[in-house]
Image (cartoon, rainbow, N blue to C red):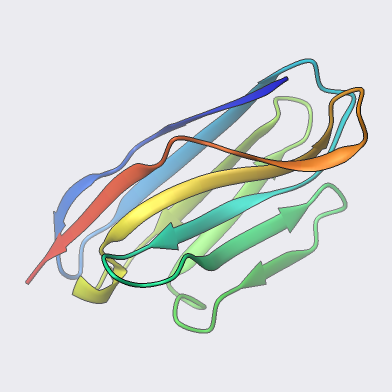
Length: 119
């Protein structure tokens, strides 16, 4: 099994910054991708950013230029640096990874961390 532990959420004023971190642990053979989704109240979960083990990065258009994702393959961690936060960034942020845990590749999820941006 694979466990993901997130940290770094909280309350911040619009224009402020937050840093989210996520660490994967467990019986992991290989991680091919890590990233973050978010879900705002009454909205669908959406991809925020992802990074592959080879370093390919993708961002949602809504966060491109404001958020920066980085990863450490050896430590099995991913970080999301968020600046210029807007009230519409308020959501629960979920870390995920695509990993092989002796049963083939599948996606694993963290518990989620709340990010609240006040006006």
